[in-house]
Length: 165
Image (cartoon, rainbow, N blue to C red; front, side, top):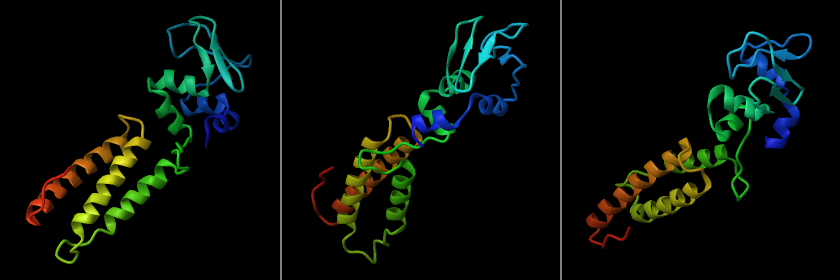
């Protein structure tokens, strides 16, 4: 789902129930972002505003503030999916990477392993550009890229070729 689709489908009342918060008849809660005795945080269908501390926003802002997480984490928790420039979601790319890894052959059976490793390096370099730096997927691609570069060096030495990584 996109950001706008989430905003349209997820109501603040659902977010409150997720965290065990309940609004009174007037639509107020005690603000979870500062200590108070009386309810000063007004809950609307698609947003909130605290008259005590001034914090307000939409469902994303509430999750970000409540859990102290960045937007990308709140977006995923609310059901969002990132789509790369090629139109593939993160999960599709992750599955493609997994499929490619599972199709790798035993080096004794595949004389073209060096060529395959070079393709894997290119794939991981491309995948790194699609994920936000610091994300779990980005780290996974970075780790696998380094692993493939090491394999490339080993295979280049074994085959008597020069190292070009």
